[in-house]
Length: 110
Length: 116
Image 1 (cartoon, each protein chain N blue to C red):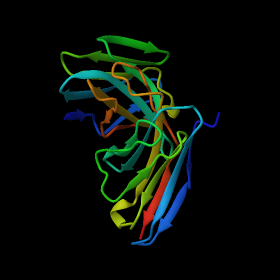
Image 2: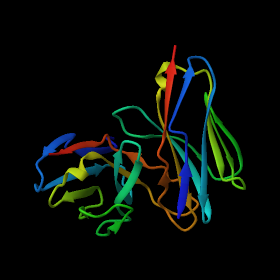
Image 3: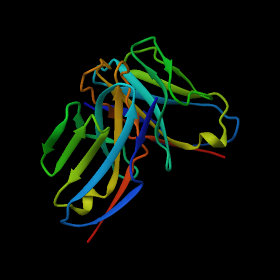
Image 4: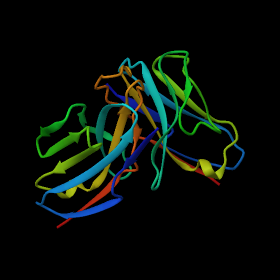
């Protein structure tokens, strides 16, 4: 099975940097996704990591350490529109369906 | 392309009533999924399909049935609705689920269901 942990809620200030962590335990790792979900809307894809290291995409970066079962999503130059839930999802080797964590609600205030 | 669409957007049912939620995708995706999302619980997989004519159970399948008669459509049925099925239902699709692939899922806008 899989166990995925994320903080329930985080707050940050506009213009700042925030790091959202995701830890997982799985029998055979095969990729980790990050999704963004605004209130009342569908999740949308942000990033995918399968190898160790940092993937940068504009203001958003995602990091993976397979040996530690750890990932984080880094959001720079925070904007009010970044207030949303951020979902971590892990895909296990041999399974084609990712398992989602409970999500982290990020509140950005002025 | 419309992507993934869901019908209806919102519905109120009485306990014991039945209904069908429709999901349609125009991206020629093989894989389709139904999730429910409840506060504090994240997305939980109800049923999924790896191709036309196939379905399989997910994490929380009890009380639901599904059908995939056409590749582009995935139906979720509630035969006898219960208040515990009050939730937001999301449909998703992806090209395939090959292990090792990137294969991001594309989600529909959701159906909000209230069972009284």
